[in-house]
Each structure stands twice: as C-alpha cells, then as structure tokens.
Image (tube, rainbow, N blue to C red; front, side, top):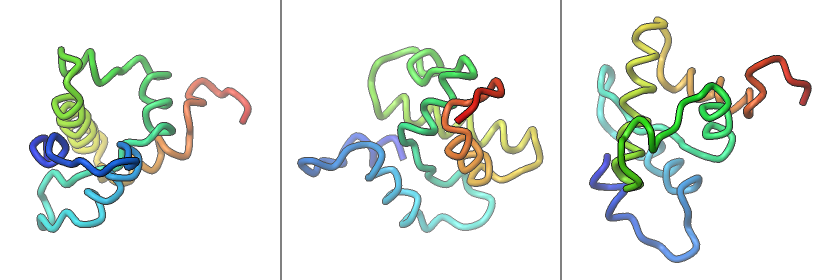
Length: 103
C-alpha cells in the first residue's frame, strides 16, 4: 500500500479521497491487512489520542506515514478483537472528541 500511496497522483485529489478509493478497491482477501481510509476526522481522533503518523513512521514521507497508520490500526484492532475497519469508523465518528468533549 505504501507504494500505491507514493505513486498516486491526480491533480486536485488529496489523501482523504484517494485513501477511500484504496479501501474500496483493495481486493486482498480476509485476514489481510487491507487499506483503510485516512481522512481529517480520523487524523483528528488519532492526534487527540496522542498518536501521530510522523512520530510512528519516524519520517515526514507521506507514503511511509500511511504505512505506519495501517500497521498501527491493524495491530490495535487485533489486540482489541475488532476489525480495523470498525476501529477506523469509530475514530471517524469520534472526530477528535476523545475526552468526552461535546460535539
């Protein structure tokens, strides 16, 4: 997925959209660490929890940061006994309000 992220270029299409596209077309079967959406709402929740893609990846290179995000999400999902897609949806729904903040 890191390679696909690095090679994706379409003027005007940014991370939020093309990671949705990656997630929709990822045809790896069950059990594979599939692509996930990384949009502003998910990022906001992760950052509110103290996690940053730059810190996790150790570099500012966005394809490497996306790979770190996927690795973290799939790892956390396995630890929690949920799917990474469900965890992604939860972070999207929370939208950065991780400490009981009102909407």
